[in-house]
Picture (cartoon, rainbow, N blue to C red):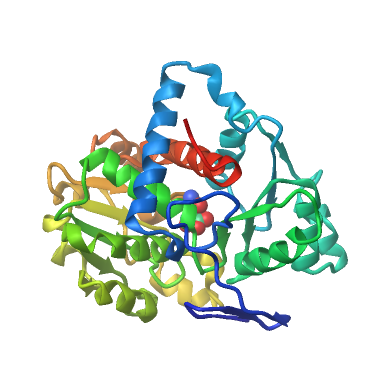
Length: 354
Ligand code: NCD
């Protein structure tokens, strides 16, 4: 098991200490491992680039393919993914770059001969300019950053790591696209009540999102956390948000907060993260977003979800009804993911976006 602190990561198979660099207005060459690296000004820079890229795609501007021409992205996914993997691949291709992956999937990589993640990462780093890594172990992306820094001292072509989710740790790029989507829909975050619902213990998307929201104290954002007692947000994260003087309301009953919520962020109970099946079965039906429930929300609320969804949005019929509601914006959220990832790739690989 791995242990995570805000300062360093130690993984039992090989202890090391690594803190990803703060962005501070300069993305070039920096690994993207945690939302802790971002301040509000960095988010503004990234979102401006994502907006400009989206506009250029909408107006059929073909110049985008020059931005990452000749660059290679390696897609290294040791956990299931549809959106993160494909949006990164699409992003890189739309920027004119190439994408590599292990032929026939990572199940045929040397890790299945017993190779360490650190060696697999460095092998990939010898071939690619950027590696997008998803791995089931918390801290794995920190390990990637640490070993790529060592490798980069020895090879001509340095490589950047971007986390696509590390176990129950973080999912930084998802949180970036989530905040971008809230901006997009609401124009500003000022005075918004943002409510995260579901498996807040194991959900890496909500961990990163809550931490990013801490950047918006000046906007007087309020954060509501709705989860059963056994699946509450880790206290290290709630404490961090509170330390920024943001009001945090925790409850196990959505009805306490739904009427005053502007952004409802629904999540899946993370079945694969439960040690014991019975524990999952006991909790899995606690929070279901149905068309009846959405009726209670504000007329201008938005309903987000990182997806995939299962029964936490009711039946297939319920899905269809929810999807048709203009307040449901998870498909727009998904599309934004590609624009934000395009902006991020350009920024880390080239530094600028013009
Ligand atoms: C999420 C993930 O993988 O953490 N999905 C995503 O990346 N869009 C959410 C989940 O699996 O529930």
